[in-house]
Length: 174
Picture 1 (cartoon, helix red, strand yellow):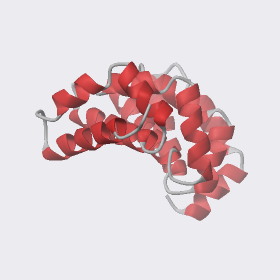
Picture 2 (cartoon, rainbow, N blue to C red):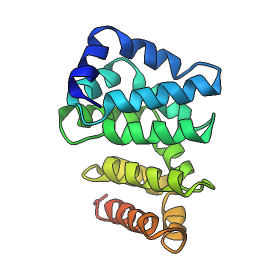
Picture 3 (cartoon, rainbow, N blue to C red):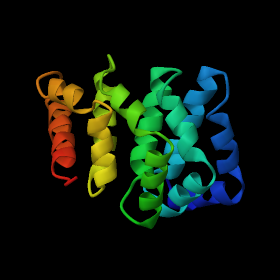
């Protein structure tokens, strides 16, 4: 996650290849690509903007609906980073919404994996805070019921993130 290495990878054209690998039919390749994309996008506004411009958001959203659980978790975490505060994050939040990313994130809230549920809740918090259209979409696609169920299930951090997500969804005016 070294910023210099992240930018060097992008300048060398590596991001385009990682985006392509996210759609590889081999599940193990998808896991590796999602993990690498997460490393490249972590805490770096420059690479986050590039991932959005190069089509990384729809490829990550597609991973949320299929493939190995590990790939879905990495994709979810990467989307959290891509939605970071700032101009790049704002553009990527719009891409997540426009590319249909809210329904698969809500779908992860009912995963058998507590980690996947927690990552989905955390990502939905970041996306919904300050965005009435995303908050409304979370409710519209059925996100409230699984979030309420998570308030009483699982570890305390999962419950806390479910509550925070409900707060982010509830405080936005229609």
